[in-house]
Image (cartoon, rainbow, N blue to C red):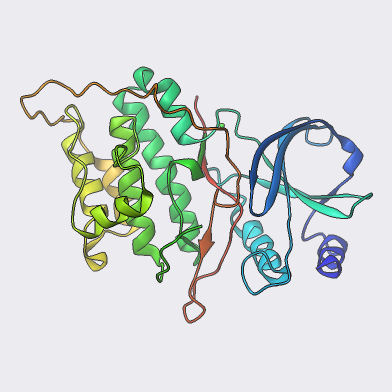
Length: 300
């Protein structure tokens, strides 16, 4: 693996930062791939995120080949405004650990942001956020990369017990759940303590109820996205087109809006952990695999 890094750096595929150029390291997350830190970069002249690359001798994503494939893929999409930017790598000379140098999400992940700011968001802002998330997914799909673990903790602002083949339609389904969360401010199936049970509810055809005040066009988009038949889900291109052309006419069930209690969510800051993006493909398909960078959007 170190030989691949040396070749990539020599040919300027990846930029190498001096380890001593980073100051004020702080732990902001931990995961199977290692620890994530925030630090000030004198080269970039801003706070960045440093993610250690934990390598194991196995056949999964933590193997040397898996990490190399991951780095190759992240360089293909890092240019996009709604993909967390990859600046390069650095190496601790004392213990020879490599770190990815990534854009720092100063507003945390989507779950944290909605918990803290949902009452301040109007529908124009929510739709813009939905467009930004869709734009990031569109970039991945156009590069034949499939995101297999899209949820609120993997969307940055500023292991899977069920094994199944993931394709672009699974991303669309997850996008539908994210859109519902944008409308409500809380995660889908929040009252289900066991995630496995939540998946069983989905398999049985259960869906969350639309929130009063949601634009009808937006509701129809996320309902189509979480269609139980993957073949009937819209493409990411169609979703983006519908978002750009939607009307802001709200639904109203004739009931009072539900009171949303989000104070009970006290999640730790675990962005950039090993699941912060888990992009994968089946070896028999044309899609690539990746497990590092995250969908993101800016709050203006």
